[in-house]
Image (cartoon, rainbow over all chains, first blue to last red; front, side, top):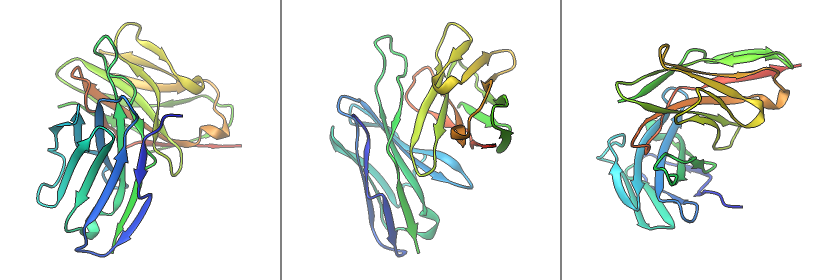
Amino acid sequence: DARVTQTPRDKVTEMGQEVTMRCQPILGHNTVFWYRQTMMQGLELLAYFRNRAPLDDSGMPKDRFSAEMPDATLATLKIQPSEPRDSAVYFCASGSGTSGGEPGELFFGEGSRLTVL
Amino acid sequence: AQSVTQLDSQVPVFEEAPVELRCNYSSSVSVYLFWYVQYPNQGLQLLLKYLSGSTLVKGINGFEAEFNKSQTSFHLRKPSVHISDTAEYFCAVSDHSGYALNFGKGTSLLVTP
């Protein structure tokens, strides 16, 4: 049963600490997305990759957030230093296009719930 | 840029009643439209999508949606809801690059006996 795997599921940390969230996309998927979900803002796109190359990270605060794909089986989202306003659920999603070039389904992980005290 | 507005933040409905969740989109280019569902403490999963062709699309769990270009809408409907349909529903849009989805704020559907 193919699924997107995210770790950690829950993370509580103190302000100023570094946080790294990891995502294992579904094997064979060539696009990977990071979303952040909060009650106030809903789902916000932070960054996405296609074939491991970053396509857009304009939704991400550049001074403290960074997203990478060191290989096809791992995507990371790092926050350094973390702040209370970063508290949210962070979702990773992966997908692939259809043969006709249309977007396929996005498969979401179960999320990483981050609480910054 | 494309965006969607979900007109209702919460929709309470009785079991076996019909329901419509409203979504309007804004875009200057052709778009793809999606509905996703999120059950508590889970990620989102695709209900249905409109890419091209027939404006009435059918999805999983008995849901359907109709693309209306003149109204810039993509409302989600189900003729008879179940308790298990209680969840958060998200409308999303992407342009024809098809890479990134922009989601609405979500509509919480609460089905009661």
